Amino acid sequence: MNPEEYNNLARVERHHWFYAGKREIVRNWINRCHPLKPTELLADCGAGTGIFADEMRAVCKVMAVDDFEESLKLLEARLGKDAVLKGSCTALPLADGSVDVLTALDVIEHVQDDRASVNEFLRVLRPGGIAVITVPALMSLWSDWDLTLRHFRRYDARTLRKIIPAQFEILHLNYINVAVLPLVFFVRKFRAFKQRLGFKINSRSEDQIPPEWLNRFLQWQFVRLACQQAVRFPAGVGLLAVLRKKTALGTSTASMDKN
Image (cartoon, rainbow, N blue to C red; front, top):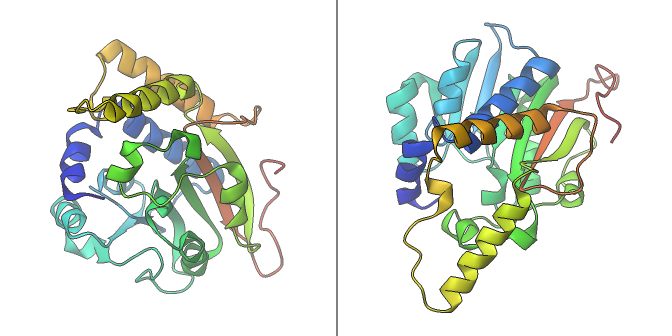
């Protein structure tokens, strides 16, 4: 990520409907699939500014991992040096089978070898431990936003499923941020059109917090649709995967979804 993007993120992420909603969604799925105990360890890979890791310290042990210097400074200031490790998703500085829950929230799209990252998640998880992964979806939404954030790709359900090793049980995989997909598509295509005409884009809607009433509504619908299991959406702005590491004798519990 470009260094200036950390400042943009730190400015809005606590209250912006997308970032706050994403954290709420991930907490929901963790509580549903692997409720954490105070003695258990959550590893937040690509921890960014550390706000999610900081929130999770109320319920369990937390280790934040990142390899960007800008992020490491923010993480150490927020969490303390003992809760921060420098390392990449393809070479996590964690022992085999040492993690109970691993989160990678909009991270693996930044990694050239995303398959190696998911294999690392598998390595460090205990049997029965879970990984919660979010990624941006649909290459048709590719825009200056992805270039600024240094994404290598956006995903669809097929390409995300393809990099998940067989030693993972897929508990849930579905598109998220579904309701705003038409608006996001229009805004990004219109912004690209203006750029081609030579207009300078001075600000992005992604960096602005909407009015409070709208911000609350957008977060409510985002969370509600992402936490349900009844509907399998054909598309969305993002994808969510909840994976459980299989035990030596097979899966530890029955799958929550039929995938």
